[in-house]
Amino acid sequence: MCNEITWDELLEEYFLARRLKAISEQSYRKVVKGFVDYLDEGVPPARISHQQVLRWRRHLLNDKKRSSQTWNNKMAHLRALYNHALEHELLPAGKNPFNQCNVPRDKKKKKTLTRTQMLKIYLLMEQCEEAEGKGQGQRGGRNALYPAWYWLTVLDMLRYTGIRFNQLLHIRLRDVNLLEGYLDLCLEGSKTRREWRVPIVTVLKSRLQRLMAQAESVGATANDFLFDVDRVVLNQQVEWDVEHARQKVRSFFNRLSKMCGFEVSPHRFRHTLATDLMKSPDRNLQLVKNLLGHCCVSTTMEYVELDMKIVGKTLESELAIYTDKKR
Image (cartoon, rainbow, N blue to C red; front, side, top):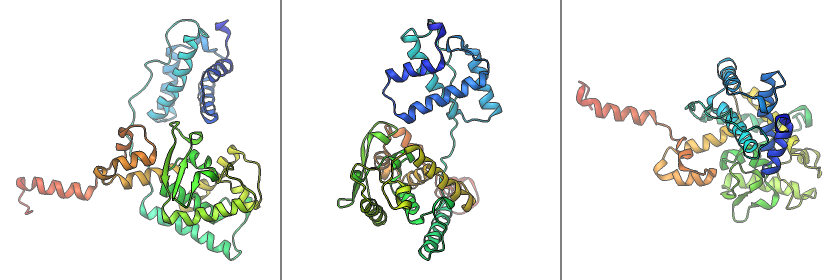
């Protein structure tokens, strides 16, 4: 029987045994589909060989130019899936074909937004907000940047809290405490299955007050999700659809990126905040770790960057002994 199990059946058995979020299940399905599409032979799980996996690796890394991190993430998914199947005899006994397939991780610089880019983003959005105030802005589905005040609230949330895209979508009205100035991040939207609290800085508070007031004015309750652009546009309570909400945010950032002339994404705000704070790692290491919800300090330390001016002056000072230049 185990020789006959299909990919879909294998996935369902795995999901049944694990407590995964919907987005995690979707991720597993996507990885499996990519592998099956590459094989293009209808090969069942029981007949996968280590060589096939290595050929897929060469295809993705060399031909498709995927990053090592992307590849290793795929391997983590498939290796876990097969380990479960082997342990519960859903597949014939043998070695996991996805073992020993990882590659060294690329050490790439975090993608951040420069001060000039940040200014351009906010100038553009504030111009849109001003035009809408004068009745000159395009409305509804014709403009992914509408309404500008709502999207400026989204940008401020990302900029001043460093939360992830998925966490933003899972914030409910009850999670925002404007009186005491903090925001509770729930398990539902957490990548690391942890709850923690982040402060609401003064510049963010006024925008959140407006969004909360608008939501409550159309009947939103404490259990409703806060960041629902359809409710803002239609000015009425609507049925929540998280996938639809994700697409709205993606459309906004795609349109914003095109208009700015550089890539703007939710995660770049997270990287930018962490990188700026980690310019003084001796003072801010624990702060950034707790703010971003990292499980280990090593992850936080990835945001440490060398200040070229300081490094340059240090080198000149230390090497002056070997040169004719005066200190």
